[in-house]
Length: 598
Image 1 (cartoon, rainbow, N blue to C red):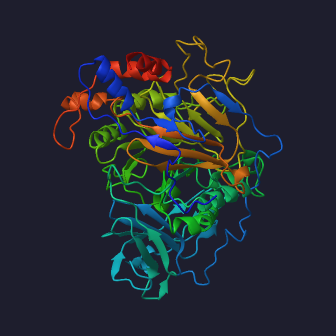
Image 2: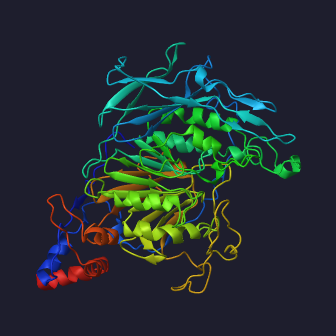
Image 3: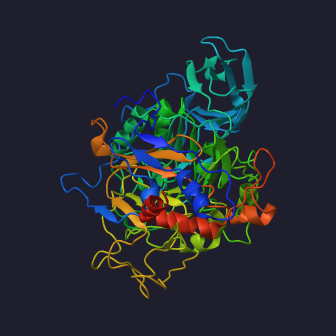
């Protein structure tokens, strides 16, 4: 496939959205219908969310494929340290800060593993980035900070770890949609990296969007992971979003590598499971060909918890990644937000307090209230665990979080919610509070990056596969299992068939690509690993269509009586009337109505 050109919806006529609605009359009903965003096919038919809700579809696991693969050995060529000098930067990674600034991170020095470890001096090496818009010329220079962390296990047979020196530098003054060249390191040694380049994203605007946004989750470091990342790189994204569970370092001494098959059997005196920190360094080297050129945004998963004997958690995740925490007002790596052109992202933390009385909820409420949909029309949320999930694995595990936060996302008309955790793919129909809703978000599970725990193949609606209410309990947080109160599964914990809200599901490894076309249309494709060498082959594809005039935000109405347009006038709409029209349109009644009045 030729991914060098931005996809255009050439097979469709995209109609502009209506800008206002008044008292409904037959003529205005006609106007409202014909000016709603919809697609007229003129060739191959790609479905849109306007065609939904879709009849549930399952593609079962292909038995000719392996469910998983082994961890890459620590001496694998893509994981080994390649620099001759330990002062030279490695594990180089970019992350977005603001529309005009970028984080550059890297590691120098040698990590130490053993019983007695002594931390390196973080101030022994400088943190510098030189950058500019011409090859070999770097008129701009910035300095940053450095840190070292330790992962300690004072138990027999377990290995302590202290990291190399982790550098974070914020470079600013970046112009939108420009190519920049940079080097990082310490010029006084000298120990600067080779020249690398990246392209900045467009400024927040309702007509400017990133080229492509890649989504992947639950990666690990297996042979399947290599296929996933090679596939992602071949699809040429301008931004990568990883929805948690990055390295699986905490699995390497058990299910991964040549470690113990039974941790408690091999280390009976250790009350805590060791996480093998060199896998973090290996993962950073493995990802560098992508992350040194394309910004990567991450959110924590359960495999990042990594508890130490002292009670410290998330140490690797917190110290290794720079995220726009202070820039977005969260002041924490566990949840934050950022803009990517006309898309506003909220990255939510499932393993910190998400209750409505907590700091994260207060931050989220404030962050969403500041979003100007005239500037960033698309609103996307990500988290590690899915709220909607029909697989047996992690079924209803984060129902508590959904009950606390979903209404707030719905009030602000979040368009898409991405999650991982379940090692398979699933796309939902638009949904809110377990009911099909044309104004609900499209929930997508993309936790199929290729980790050591293998792909999930069991569905909660399969005979004998419905978990008990006590099976799926989060490592952090409460459990709120519920029986359905209406519909075909009324009174039951699980459906006896694929739920109506589950549009499509398949047990395969892969990744997704989101291409935002304009303020109302985005093209979503899911790419299976087994299709990596096939052109124009998708595991799933759909146009996700926003309907801002149909789905008026209740939060906006409460705050100001209706959204203000750029000209200052109020947009007014009757949500119930527009939902009525939407339902008629979806069921084919409106075309008949139009025939009558024409």
